[in-house]
Image (cartoon, rainbow, N blue to C red; front, side, top):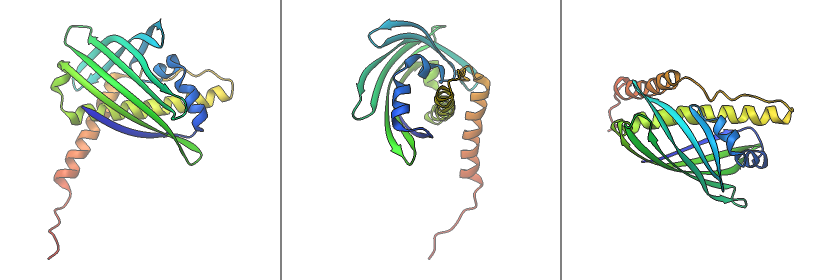
Length: 191
């Protein structure tokens, strides 16, 4: 499943690119993610917990930077993991490209996600909604950390955001789609 999302960070490209070079800080901004070890050579062990509807899935696995292009401001990460209770596997290639957007930075993220097991039973809409919520939270946490670092402060990103809150926000996104689809007045084509 291919998922494309963009978000903007009110910081210059150079600062955002520098931030993406610090993988522990990047991981601390993603709700539910936690690095557990640095395996060397741009490879890390970690865990990710995410709620899909009523089910909380907890994956353990590895993430590896497979490409880092300084000139193009492009980074590619390959991640694989297994659900800790044996309910499935996930693999994902994430590509992030940074471009100037006014005085800030536009981050274009492409996720090529393959799921097997319990997570695979959810539709593309639910997975896209959860991903959208996670990306919004990630962008907010990243901007906060970059701004705090400029002031010499340390900020704990809210990476431990509750799975229930993320699941609720994703469900609200899905409901709003349904309401728009079914309750917007039908407009007949002009003759």
